[in-house]
Image (cartoon, rainbow, N blue to C red; front, top):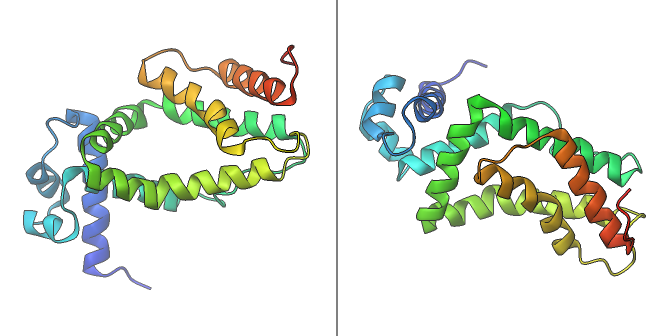
Length: 192
């Protein structure tokens, strides 16, 4: 089925926003610049999005929609191996120069725009949290009564914290986070 003019314009706008923020940064990103790059009128953008942060957020959502596969986390029966796979992929994405500046820009926009933050929570954060919690809930390796929300925070927050601070993110760091958190959740003093 051929794409409609609206679909083509929407895709051009999202691509333009993502490319521009990587080139000029979030502070210099403008609706006018996005419109010029996309070859559409500024009014077209404002018809669909209230702010440049909202456009950028939809650009990220479009990237995940285009990614192959299900958003479900792997469940091979080996929780540590599955979490290491996912956290290593997260490290790879956070280290990718094509995404670093746009992701930082989106993070700043979310922190400064309560409406965008609420939309981010509803459309991305809450669904992803539910997927992660479902995987942890299926883990026979975790003791009964494990606080899954806390486990989730312990697993993902170190990566985000290190990334936001500009620290080095490596697969070895991701593996160490998984080993340490799982050892702690199991009541062990020796992360292995």
